[in-house]
Amino acid sequence: MTEQPFTAPTEAARRGDVPEGFRAVQVGGPFIAHNGPLYARLVDERLQLGFRVEPRHTNPLQICHGGMMASFADMLLPMAAMYQHAGERRFLPTISLQVDYLGASPLGAWVQGEGEVLRVTRNMLFAQGLVTADGAAVLRVSGIFKLGALIGDGSDRDPLRLRGAPA
Image (cartoon, rainbow, N blue to C red; front, side):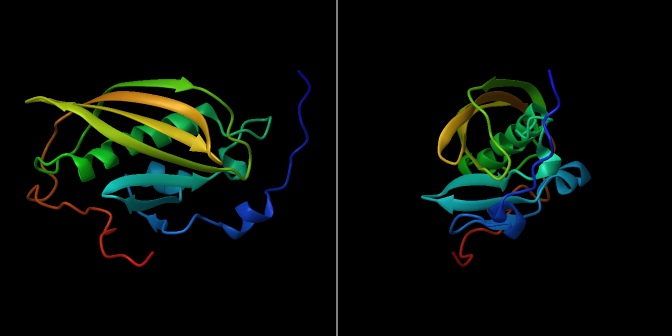
């Protein structure tokens, strides 16, 4: 395979354009902070999480690296669960993450996902989600998460402060 020349980011990627209603959020620890920024919005009380594919996210073919997509999915499902699940807010460490790559997310693409809680047991939460790039399905994900320690007193229902945020 011949190495592809580096392609400069698109104008949209340079400007950091994000769709209407999304705003930058701080989620996770230093790893996600370094690989972000991630953006979020609520639509009908469902969390949507997204990011713009930048050169640092890509493989040699200027397509978003699968590891970045998996990391994004691993943040998407627990964060979506924090908005959907009516129980106490808890840390949700990943037990299992199944990722099906359906298509490519090229440099400059807007990657966006939405997840849903399927079931909650005494100790685990089961969720699934779909991720798109510029509107085309690129990732199907499902995960099992342990119901871990309470975050704060467990009552925070808006950890990203999205309710009442200007669109």
